Length: 246
Image (cartoon, rainbow, N blue to C red):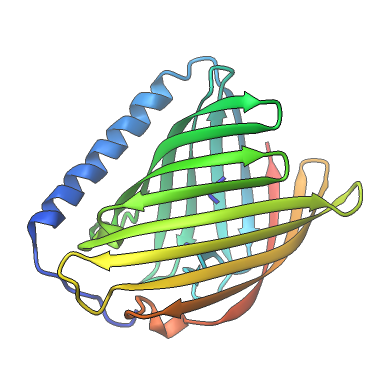
Protein backbone atom coordinates (compact mmCIF):
# COMPACT_ATOMS: atom_id res chain seq x y z
CA UNK A 1 0.00 0.00 0.00
CA UNK A 2 2.75 2.14 0.67
CA UNK A 3 3.82 1.86 -1.39
CA UNK A 4 12.34 5.41 -0.30
CA UNK A 5 23.14 13.91 0.12
CA UNK A 6 26.30 14.28 0.27
CA UNK A 7 25.75 17.10 2.79
CA UNK A 8 23.31 17.05 5.68
CA UNK A 9 21.10 20.14 5.76
CA UNK A 10 21.04 22.05 9.03
CA UNK A 11 18.12 24.18 10.26
CA UNK A 12 17.66 26.38 13.29
CA UNK A 13 15.51 25.03 16.09
CA UNK A 14 12.41 27.11 15.59
CA UNK A 15 9.07 26.85 17.40
CA UNK A 16 7.67 24.94 14.42
CA UNK A 17 10.29 22.22 14.93
CA UNK A 18 9.15 21.52 18.48
CA UNK A 19 5.56 21.37 17.25
CA UNK A 20 6.49 18.90 14.51
CA UNK A 21 8.20 16.52 16.95
CA UNK A 22 5.05 16.48 19.11
CA UNK A 23 2.96 15.86 15.99
CA UNK A 24 5.08 12.83 15.06
CA UNK A 25 4.69 11.34 18.53
CA UNK A 26 0.95 11.98 18.39
CA UNK A 27 0.69 10.16 15.05
CA UNK A 28 2.64 7.17 16.37
CA UNK A 29 0.32 6.87 19.37
CA UNK A 30 -2.73 7.11 17.11
CA UNK A 31 -1.43 4.38 14.80
CA UNK A 32 -0.88 1.92 17.64
CA UNK A 33 -4.24 2.88 19.17
CA UNK A 34 -6.04 2.17 15.89
CA UNK A 35 -4.22 -1.14 15.36
CA UNK A 36 -5.11 -2.26 18.88
CA UNK A 37 -8.82 -2.04 17.99
CA UNK A 38 -8.47 -4.39 15.01
CA UNK A 39 -8.98 -7.58 16.99
CA UNK A 40 -10.81 -9.42 14.19
CA UNK A 41 -8.70 -8.08 11.32
CA UNK A 42 -7.52 -10.09 8.36
CA UNK A 43 -3.76 -10.18 8.02
CA UNK A 44 -1.70 -10.22 4.81
CA UNK A 45 1.89 -9.48 3.93
CA UNK A 46 4.75 -9.88 1.52
CA UNK A 47 8.52 -10.15 1.29
CA UNK A 48 10.18 -8.76 -1.80
CA UNK A 49 13.37 -7.81 -3.55
CA UNK A 50 13.41 -4.58 -5.56
CA UNK A 51 16.16 -3.65 -7.99
CA UNK A 52 15.97 0.04 -6.99
CA UNK A 53 13.85 1.44 -4.14
CA UNK A 54 12.25 4.55 -5.61
CA UNK A 55 10.12 6.47 -3.09
CA UNK A 56 8.13 9.38 -4.48
CA UNK A 57 10.51 9.59 -7.41
CA UNK A 58 13.76 9.47 -5.39
CA UNK A 59 16.05 6.43 -5.27
CA UNK A 60 16.57 5.83 -1.54
CA UNK A 61 18.71 2.76 -2.29
CA UNK A 62 21.29 4.64 -4.37
CA UNK A 63 20.21 2.61 -7.42
CA UNK A 64 20.96 -0.69 -5.65
CA UNK A 65 18.76 -3.74 -4.95
CA UNK A 66 17.18 -3.88 -1.49
CA UNK A 67 14.95 -6.35 0.45
CA UNK A 68 11.56 -5.20 1.70
CA UNK A 69 8.79 -6.56 3.92
CA UNK A 70 5.21 -5.42 4.54
CA UNK A 71 2.33 -6.48 6.77
CA UNK A 72 -1.24 -5.17 6.44
CA UNK A 73 -4.39 -5.41 8.58
CA UNK A 74 -8.01 -4.66 7.75
CA UNK A 75 -11.47 -5.60 9.00
CA UNK A 76 -15.09 -5.40 7.95
CA UNK A 77 -15.59 -2.32 10.12
CA UNK A 78 -13.38 -0.25 7.82
CA UNK A 79 -10.30 0.05 10.02
CA UNK A 80 -6.92 -0.72 8.45
CA UNK A 81 -3.25 -0.45 9.32
CA UNK A 82 0.15 -1.94 8.74
CA UNK A 83 3.90 -1.66 8.53
CA UNK A 84 6.37 -1.44 5.67
CA UNK A 85 10.17 -1.71 5.99
CA UNK A 86 13.02 -1.44 3.50
CA UNK A 87 16.76 -1.10 3.54
CA UNK A 88 17.99 2.24 2.18
CA UNK A 89 21.34 3.88 1.41
CA UNK A 90 20.63 7.59 1.94
CA UNK A 91 22.15 9.56 3.48
CA UNK A 92 23.95 6.39 4.61
CA UNK A 93 23.07 2.72 5.06
CA UNK A 94 19.90 2.61 7.14
CA UNK A 95 16.32 1.36 7.10
CA UNK A 96 13.03 3.11 6.41
CA UNK A 97 10.02 1.96 8.43
CA UNK A 98 6.52 3.25 7.66
CA UNK A 99 3.63 2.58 10.04
CA UNK A 100 0.13 3.60 9.04
CA UNK A 101 -3.47 3.30 10.22
CA UNK A 102 -6.79 4.69 9.13
CA UNK A 103 -10.46 4.23 8.40
CA UNK A 104 -12.14 3.55 5.04
CA UNK A 105 -15.84 3.90 4.24
CA UNK A 106 -17.61 2.52 1.19
CA UNK A 107 -19.84 5.13 -0.46
CA UNK A 108 -21.13 2.75 -3.13
CA UNK A 109 -20.05 -0.55 -4.65
CA UNK A 110 -17.30 1.04 -6.76
CA UNK A 111 -16.25 4.03 -4.60
CA UNK A 112 -14.86 4.53 -1.08
CA UNK A 113 -13.07 7.25 0.88
CA UNK A 114 -10.37 6.90 3.51
CA UNK A 115 -8.48 8.95 6.07
CA UNK A 116 -5.53 8.09 8.26
CA UNK A 117 -2.09 8.77 9.66
CA UNK A 118 1.38 7.49 8.80
CA UNK A 119 4.72 7.71 10.59
CA UNK A 120 8.03 7.46 8.68
CA UNK A 121 11.08 6.56 10.76
CA UNK A 122 14.79 6.06 10.07
CA UNK A 123 16.24 4.04 13.00
CA UNK A 124 19.82 5.25 12.50
CA UNK A 125 18.92 8.81 11.55
CA UNK A 126 15.96 9.76 13.74
CA UNK A 127 16.43 13.47 13.00
CA UNK A 128 14.72 12.88 9.65
CA UNK A 129 11.64 11.11 11.07
CA UNK A 130 8.31 12.65 10.11
CA UNK A 131 4.58 11.98 10.26
CA UNK A 132 1.77 12.62 7.78
CA UNK A 133 -2.02 12.80 7.74
CA UNK A 134 -3.79 11.63 4.58
CA UNK A 135 -7.20 11.46 2.91
CA UNK A 136 -8.08 9.55 -0.23
CA UNK A 137 -10.63 8.16 -2.69
CA UNK A 138 -10.61 4.70 -4.27
CA UNK A 139 -12.49 3.08 -7.13
CA UNK A 140 -12.02 -0.21 -8.98
CA UNK A 141 -9.29 1.08 -11.32
CA UNK A 142 -8.15 4.37 -9.75
CA UNK A 143 -7.17 5.63 -6.32
CA UNK A 144 -5.74 8.89 -5.06
CA UNK A 145 -4.42 10.37 -1.83
CA UNK A 146 -3.32 13.73 -0.45
CA UNK A 147 -0.76 13.77 2.39
CA UNK A 148 0.13 16.68 4.68
CA UNK A 149 3.23 16.90 6.88
CA UNK A 150 4.34 19.84 9.10
CA UNK A 151 7.97 18.64 9.42
CA UNK A 152 9.03 16.93 6.20
CA UNK A 153 12.24 14.92 6.77
CA UNK A 154 12.34 16.26 10.33
CA UNK A 155 13.00 19.81 9.12
CA UNK A 156 11.04 23.07 9.33
CA UNK A 157 9.27 22.26 6.08
CA UNK A 158 5.57 21.90 5.41
CA UNK A 159 4.78 19.41 2.64
CA UNK A 160 1.74 18.42 0.63
CA UNK A 161 1.99 15.33 -1.58
CA UNK A 162 -0.76 14.24 -3.94
CA UNK A 163 -0.82 11.01 -5.93
CA UNK A 164 -3.06 9.17 -8.39
CA UNK A 165 -2.59 5.46 -9.07
CA UNK A 166 -4.27 3.34 -11.70
CA UNK A 167 -4.32 -0.21 -12.99
CA UNK A 168 -5.88 -1.76 -16.05
CA UNK A 169 -5.97 -5.45 -17.13
CA UNK A 170 -4.38 -5.96 -20.53
CA UNK A 171 -4.88 -9.73 -20.42
CA UNK A 172 -6.23 -12.08 -17.73
CA UNK A 173 -2.70 -12.38 -16.31
CA UNK A 174 -1.01 -9.04 -17.13
CA UNK A 175 -2.05 -5.60 -15.92
CA UNK A 176 -0.86 -2.09 -16.67
CA UNK A 177 0.08 0.14 -13.71
CA UNK A 178 0.51 3.91 -13.67
CA UNK A 179 1.34 6.50 -10.99
CA UNK A 180 1.60 10.29 -10.91
CA UNK A 181 2.68 12.23 -7.81
CA UNK A 182 3.36 15.87 -6.99
CA UNK A 183 5.19 17.23 -3.92
CA UNK A 184 5.00 20.84 -2.71
CA UNK A 185 7.48 22.07 -0.06
CA UNK A 186 7.28 25.31 1.91
CA UNK A 187 9.82 26.37 4.57
CA UNK A 188 8.80 28.23 7.73
CA UNK A 189 11.45 30.89 7.08
CA UNK A 190 10.79 31.11 3.33
CA UNK A 191 14.34 30.04 2.39
CA UNK A 192 15.54 28.42 -0.83
CA UNK A 193 14.19 24.99 0.10
CA UNK A 194 10.74 26.02 -1.07
CA UNK A 195 10.07 24.04 -4.22
CA UNK A 196 8.03 21.43 -6.02
CA UNK A 197 8.74 18.13 -7.73
CA UNK A 198 6.71 15.62 -9.71
CA UNK A 199 7.24 11.90 -10.16
CA UNK A 200 5.77 9.41 -12.59
CA UNK A 201 5.79 5.64 -12.92
CA UNK A 202 4.40 3.23 -15.52
CA UNK A 203 4.85 -0.51 -15.67
CA UNK A 204 3.48 -4.01 -16.10
CA UNK A 205 2.68 -6.62 -13.48
CA UNK A 206 1.73 -10.28 -13.36
CA UNK A 207 1.09 -12.93 -10.71
CA UNK A 208 1.75 -16.66 -10.51
CA UNK A 209 0.24 -18.16 -7.40
CA UNK A 210 1.64 -16.30 -4.39
CA UNK A 211 4.37 -14.68 -6.49
CA UNK A 212 4.09 -11.21 -8.03
CA UNK A 213 6.40 -9.72 -10.67
CA UNK A 214 6.56 -6.08 -11.74
CA UNK A 215 8.71 -4.07 -14.12
CA UNK A 216 8.37 -0.29 -14.36
CA UNK A 217 10.00 2.93 -15.54
CA UNK A 218 10.09 5.96 -13.23
CA UNK A 219 10.76 9.63 -13.94
CA UNK A 220 11.28 12.70 -11.77
CA UNK A 221 11.37 16.45 -12.33
CA UNK A 222 11.64 19.42 -9.98
CA UNK A 223 10.94 23.14 -10.09
CA UNK A 224 12.52 25.61 -7.67
CA UNK A 225 14.24 25.04 -4.34
CA UNK A 226 17.22 22.84 -3.57
CA UNK A 227 17.34 19.07 -3.77
CA UNK A 228 17.96 16.90 -0.73
CA UNK A 229 19.84 14.11 -2.46
CA UNK A 230 21.71 15.67 -5.39
CA UNK A 231 24.20 12.80 -5.58
CA UNK A 232 21.55 10.39 -6.87
CA UNK A 233 19.23 12.75 -8.71
CA UNK A 234 18.10 11.20 -11.97
CA UNK A 235 15.29 12.02 -14.38
CA UNK A 236 14.31 8.41 -15.09
CA UNK A 237 15.16 4.80 -14.33
CA UNK A 238 13.94 1.20 -14.46
CA UNK A 239 12.70 -0.86 -11.52
CA UNK A 240 12.08 -4.61 -11.20
CA UNK A 241 10.22 -6.04 -8.21
CA UNK A 242 9.78 -9.70 -7.20
CA UNK A 243 7.46 -10.36 -4.26
CA UNK A 244 6.04 -13.35 -2.39
CA UNK A 245 2.71 -12.76 -0.68
CA UNK A 246 1.32 -14.53 2.38
